[in-house]
Image (cartoon, rainbow, N blue to C red; front, side):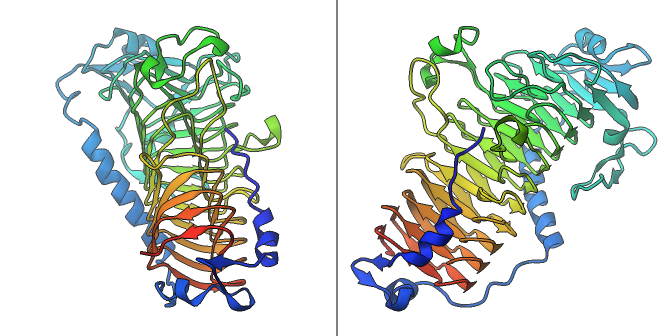
Length: 460
């Protein structure tokens, strides 16, 4: 799901062009006084990293607990693997809604199909619920997660993921506490590809898992259309043709080192992506343009809250319109809520958080109260006519611009803090419109704090 950004060219462009606001030109390239008057020049102090991580993950946990039914399976039967059932799939097949399949530690070479209302959980005996460090990760997971492995290395490439879900499956279907790895490698840009976890037309819960080293995207989320099995060129991808929605809860997982995105949200899906750590996902061998840690397009509207997204060569959290597909244009904008995340040290050529042509004035991309730091390019980048809200973000230590608005609309650009940038702190160019811009703090920039070229800014 590459978003074809060209943000690095900003760095040179900004230092060559004269900048204006409302017919006023700043002396010697410095932002005009009337723009800076409404914005603080106080210093920006970042919270300690560990403290920030703890706060974001706690917010995600609180939201997840409100979405996950913790009572539904308490009265059901418990099916044990391998004591009662030799394979995980045979236990799932025997279970009914409300039952729990409990899997003892070990390696299971299976690709699984989940059943509605069944909870699949790793065994918690022998201190299995004790939180332990995970190699190279910040998030800690239950010990049972690392002991209980579902492995696809003995499988052949196919359209099946490590987990598939029957259409219409709901939120009482839970996967809790597994290492899910080694889905055979494939090209996730081609129609019919598998994800490690295929969430098509399903709304399950995936929590406390390590999803790693899979040959495709870690978790893929899509609705199910009425003509799902028809050839791609003849299909109808409009909202009215949805047969089954997809609103998964993806909570407290480590999603790393997959040959695709960490999490991909397509085709009107609305997952809750809460408190995950997503890093090292890299598919640059496919096209030379790697996909991001979290990617959102084709009318998807996920809630992306409290995640730690870092070291993904294709960028951190990127959202876009998506390429045309089928016989009709997708008829609702891509409009995620991206809030309370920590994003750092991702791509050299893509932003930490980006919007490429997504959103509308009715359904903007909301980028709110995130921390974006140590990005080698732009911290937050908006381009190609996208519509966004930017409020309360902290952007620091970027190799280029802190916040770049290029040919885009920002409904509100308020209360953001930008510091220690390798170029001007906030740049608004190429016919952009900012409808409201107040109470931002910009400091310690290379060049002017704020620069604007051929764009409209209403400070209100």
